[in-house]
Every structure is written in C-alpha cells, then in structure tokens.
Length: 182
Image 1 (cartoon, rainbow, N blue to C red):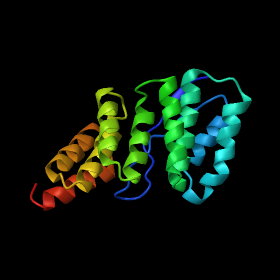
Image 2 (image 1 turned 180 degrees about the horizontal axis):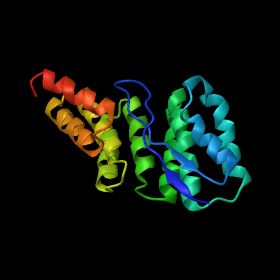
Image 3 (image 1 turned 135 degrees about the vertical axis):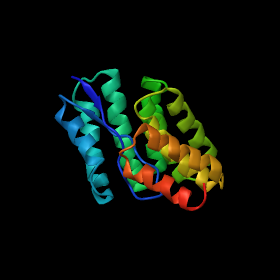
C-alpha cells in the first residue's frame, strides 16, 4: 500500500483549508479520503466509512494517521471540533509533526477561536518544509487577518502564492492586499 498525499480542499473563501490524504489499496480508506471532497452534508455518513477503514484492515502507521486526518477533516466539516481534535492528536501520536495533521488541527483551533494555537500548528507545519507549506502559509495568513496583523497576513499570502503560483485563492488574496496598497 502506498500513501499519496494530496493538497487542499477549498471549503469557502476566508475559511482555513484542509489537507486531505488518500490511502491506496484499502477501499474504505479511499472512500474516506473521497468523502473529504464532498459537500459537508455528506460528512456524517462518511464517518462510518472512515471507521470501517480504521477497524477492518491492517494498515501502516502512516496510513492509519492519514485516515485519522481525513476523518478529522470530516468532523471539522460537521463542526464537531472536539472529535476532530481527538483524531488529529491521535494522528500526531502516530507521526509527530505530520504536516497534514498539524495544518488540520490548526484549522480546528482556528474554527474555535484559538488563533494562537492555530498559528503555532501552522508554524510547525511550515518548519517541516513539506509540500503542504503553501496551505499552512495561507491558513496562517487567515489567522493573522483575524487578529488584525495585516502586514503578517499579506506576507503569508505572498509566500503561499510563491510556493503555489497556480493557486487562484492565494493569488486572489495577494491581489486584494495589493489593491489596498500593500
């Protein structure tokens, strides 16, 4: 079984972005991943698929962590942040500094108004220098906006745009700031 990490799921403009992961070779795990890309109304049904993926097949440590992250994303979609945080914590117990778990735990913190904790997780994900840094920078930019640190937010959006120049959302935030004189 091979883990393929995929990037960003657009929830809505101004909302933190999730980093979901696909696990190949386990049909339930693959369906759990696919569910993270579906409308939020389907999230509750998809939780059972993730549970099945966690309980019915032997998985590697990284695959299990990935399934937990995906299930946590679904819990975030449903507004069940305590359950999401539990899954992200479990993933981080399996793989400390797992960028996707850090970014998505940061999102749960952001959604619950724990902006400083969110920024700390985004910083850890950025420090990992993973392929997911663009998402961490973008989400940190949103967190900085929420605490009125607009210079820092602009710098984060610029960095996200540099790391992923074809990402329309990051380019749009940079353009917005430039129109504001940054």
